Structure formats: C-alpha cells, structure tokens
Image 1 (cartoon, protein in one colour):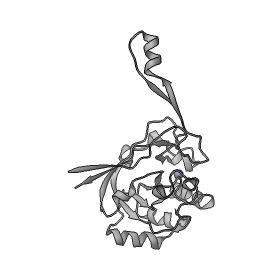
Image 2: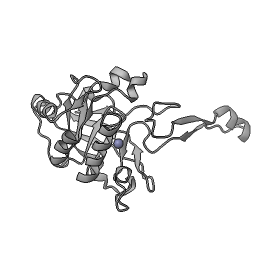
Image 3: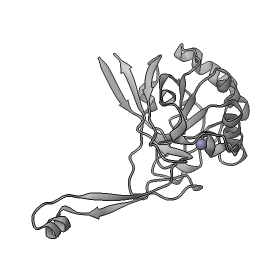
Length: 230
Ligand SMILES: [Zn+2]
C-alpha cells in the first residue's frame, strides 16, 4: 500500500517568511456573497496571493545562489530533479543553533542503516519545526550545515537536500557558505519542510516536490510529498 506524507507547510496570510524575502500576503479577492450580487445569482470565490518565490516550503533554483548568467532558473530544471529516491537522517539530538558536522551525518546514516546514493534527495530531520514553529526562534535558532558537511553530502552526488529551517546553514556566514557549496557542486536544497519525523526509520522512499513554472524564477513554493510503500 502506498502512503503519502505531506512535507509542506500551509500557506496563509502573514505566515513566517525568511527576512530576506517579501512577506506572504493572502486575502480574499471576492466572496460568494459579493459575486452573487454582481451576477444576480451565480456565485464563486477566489483569493489573491502576493509572496516571494521563496515563500513557505520551497526549493531554491541555482540562479538564486549562483550569479553566473547561465545558472538555471526554476522552470529550466529537469522535472526528474523533483521526483527522486530519498532518505531521511535523524539529527534531532542536535541542539538548536549548533553545527551539523560530517560525523553527525555519518552517525545518522549508520543509525538509519541507509547509504546516500547518486541522484538522491536527503532530508535532515532536526525537530526544529515542532520545537519552534509559531515563535520568533523559528526564523533564527536551528542547527545548520557547515561548508564541510554540505560538501560531504554534495560529494555523494545528491540532487537536493531538505531542511525544516528557513535556511540550510545558521543565519549569516554559515548559511552563505552552504549556498556557495550548492553553487560550486551543482545541487540544491529545500527549506521550511515539516513532518520529517514521519520519515525517520523508513529507509529509502520516493520523493515528489515539483516547483511552479515561474519564468526566471529563483525558487518556487512546492508541495513536498514522501511516497512510502508499506
Ligand atoms: Zn536556500
């Protein structure tokens, strides 16, 4: 039997957003009542959305962190990069605002009895979402990769990795370095995921998280889903 796990955060008015990106503004465009009045009977409702291309659960396009004019925008990446095999590493013992080291990643692979393989998406579960979502700490206090540990997963030939935090490295230089590694080694990452605890101990599974086809997009919100065979 196939079980689908939703890894995306809900999008809603004033939902928490990384401070480098525009706020999420979502409101009613027209209500059933208003529309009924206009049409004399037919009714419909719709919303208006204003947000950055890095709003909510999203994936970064290479052009976001790579100034090379040839770096692909979000709509230019192959769909295969968003439909891959995946593993999840349990890093929930890491304290907030700590560095995730190569030793941490190796130990988590051993504990989960998984190997990271070429073409994989790797999820890093830290418990950050559950611990901090809805508090100011959500945007600042999380464990993050370093240049060295980001290079370590990059050397496995992954296409992407995903974190619960709003950035893969801790705020500031740490985060810049992780993004530089992605540019140098040619992989990317997803931010603001949730429900990763449901993937701990599940071994290999399939992941789907397709971006919107935004022309020139530097990233895109995604509906991230883990597909488990049970
Ligand atoms: Zn990023």
